[in-house]
Length: 150
Image (cartoon, rainbow, N blue to C red):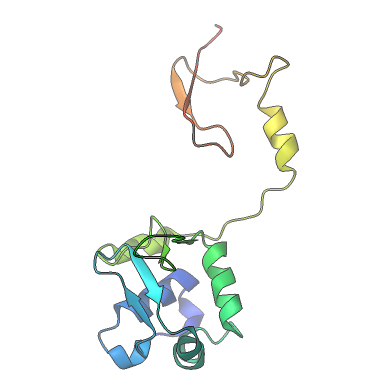
């Protein structure tokens, strides 16, 4: 059986979802058919049964949700899978990927960090990067190509 002492939160969650015995999951948590998201179908039942067995360190369902967010899980907000949770490294067909998951650390002084990336004219600073190296600016989904001034 699984012990809490030697498994991280994502590993315990994977163990619960991957367990063949449906009584372990108490019918309250299940994978989506494609295996990229999971859904907690009965939160109260999940809290009373599954959480007490596998997540003893979490006192209630709200703390479980907080742990999901802490590890970077996102909740599907609309569509057929509304309410399901996903993470790029948490998939049914790749259970070993969850070993790479780490809790997110809160970034301190986000504004100062973003400002440090910009020059006076608003463009990104060109540090010691090579010509045409692709980087991701902090907190944006845009890829920017930096030109070397050397």
